[in-house]
Image (cartoon, rainbow, N blue to C red):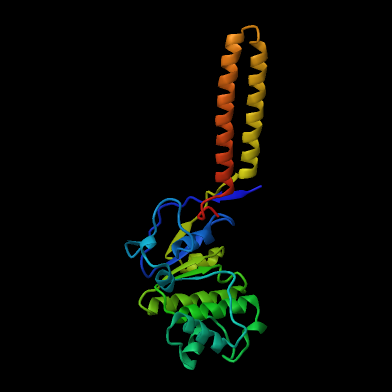
Length: 269
C-alpha cells in the first residue's frame, strides 16, 4: 500500500517584516508549506515568490541562508553551546558571534546556561531553543519556526515568542512565520493568521487493486459475450479481436496508473 498526500494551498501573500502564524489540523500540510517556502521541495503547481522573484530561479543554498527553517527536530554537535555556534558559522563561512553576543541570543530564547554547557546533556526542548538562538545569530531575512513552543510551559513559551518578536522587529524587520497550535499565542502576537487545511489523500494500493479487478471483470464479460455469439462465427471473431485489443489497452493503462501512484512527485509528501 502507498499513501500519497496531495496538499492544495490558497494564494498567500505575506508582508515583509510581519509576524504570521500558520494554523490548521495535524497533517494538513503546514510543515510541508515551510519546506516549499525554503525550497527543500518544489511545488507541483504554482509559484513561490521571494522579493518578487520565483524561488526556483534563486540558488537554493543562498535562499536557505536568507530563509532559515527551525524544525521540531534539530541537530546539534556533541560539543558545548559556544562550540556549536562556532561550528555552524564555520560551515556558513561567516564570522561567529562573540561570547557576549552568544549570551544575548541565548537570553532571547530564555536559556540560562553557561556557554560551556555540553549540548548532549540537554533535553529536546532545550536543544531546539539553542538551535533557534544559533539561527537568530545568522540574521536571516525570513525565520520559519515549526512548533517552537510545543515542549515549553506556557510562561516560557510566552517569554520566548515575546523576545523573538521584539528581536525580529528591532533588526530591520525580519519576517517571522510560526506554525503553532497555541491559539492564545497567535491571538497575542499574530499580525496575520493563515489557516491551512483541505488535505486530499489517495491510497494507491487500493486504486491499483480496483484497476485490476475492473480488468478481470471486463475480460470475463467479454468471454461470456463471445460464448453467447458463437452461433455467428464472423461476429464472434470480430468481437474476440476487439476484446483482445481493448484488454491490451486497459492492461497498459493499468500499469501506467499503478506506476504513477507508486512514484509520486516529490512535492506530494
